[in-house]
Length: 565
Ligand code: 1PR
Image (tube, rainbow, N blue to C red):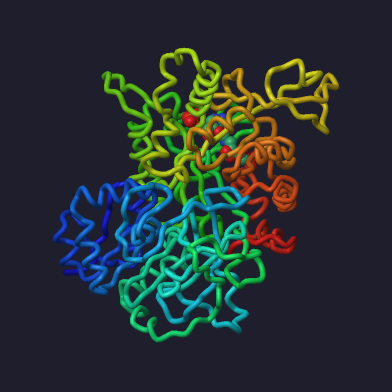
């Protein structure tokens, strides 16, 4: 009896526990197949890969009881993979059978937009009165409500999904199912546990049982084109009434380290130098600051543990505590970076990067960001490419940390944090790295530049260009690029548009522009000039010079879709 949560072992289930905890709801975790049959309410959250999820469900003997539970019509809330598993199969894992409740196959996004879809999208309601409140059609008071999505695969809006369809959205011109409901069986492609207060209300309505019963008697509000073939419906992304544009994301970044007094503080560098008059700059406490940014409307919060390369990350209990405490209060995606790599403890115990990442996910992170280790992995990957046809270099045949983490937690959970600096050259031919012609010549008047990757927080330059790095990381399975720039960091002079445009073109995964934001206009500028999907800032938010709300209002006035403006 009671509310159960099915934790199949991948992704950030802690956020769902935190969302339930916020309302004081009691729940149990499914530990054996009988728990599913005994439940009176069941939540199946999940990110990660379809094949992995189904494999675990089968192995633990959960698949059959789950199907039985859902067929009985008892209250069910599936999230992301918890929706996709209801289908017959997925292009993500050919040959793997799903639960077969919704008679369709989950498909990969085929669009020119960057995949995965990461960010805040709107819903178009096909029925009213379901678990997710549809704004009244004439309401001007509800401003563009948005929910957080992160996925590469989706359910088509087609004849098979139509009987289930509660809401759809559009991404890159492709309409897809964003929520289904049949009686008390509900599932969302988006993550309510990461969709701020709107998302939390979905948990409340589900557990309190206030919404579900009404849905079956409803009429279709909006006709999203339905295809009979199961293929994509035709949609120009604008006129068909199937959702709008993905919002540009504004991310607050907290560089965290221990100061000379031994306290964990948020700091901020000027071109990565975080010391002022000999001491580490202290701009506040990590949890309190993250919570403030959440309340001010940040779409994501990123923590970078900037001295992690010196220590063993698993021993970094304060950082894990920061994540645990933050995720109890902050219901937007949390990224943690710093020290995601293989390492060996002083006592000789070996820990893989996957293990380190797993510890962060279990502590409340939705994504991990890999810096130095991504550079080493890319170097090996490129070297391996050069050796094609010859015996591979020693370690290159082992999967990189990027590949390992992406396989278990999904690409969308792996961010690559890049710390480049400009290197001027007289002509493109004078280096093997990809160069661009710059509008800002170097001190000696050189008009060509390549961007050198660094490791260890910018302390060591490598013989690797950013262009080559990001392409290699995408090929290894990374889901997003966090693109810093040492030359611009802390300068308030605007983003390095040339760097960001180059990287935006190099990869098809989302790019987060970072370093140099000084005014709200800089955000509009970077989105207009480069097409970056998100922009991150630190100093201006910490010092209170520009608020997140101000940035969003400016973007909205300039015609960008934003959340909460
Ligand atoms: O190499 O995997 O252990 O990761 C270390 C991580 O720590 C990397 O993501 C690296 O970027 C970060 N890091 C290391 N040293 C520093 C430092 O500042 N001394 N911080 C550092 C990097 C850069 C940004 C910053 C933006 C925006 N911080 O994320 O927040 O530049 O700043 P602004 O808006 O004030 O201009 P690993």
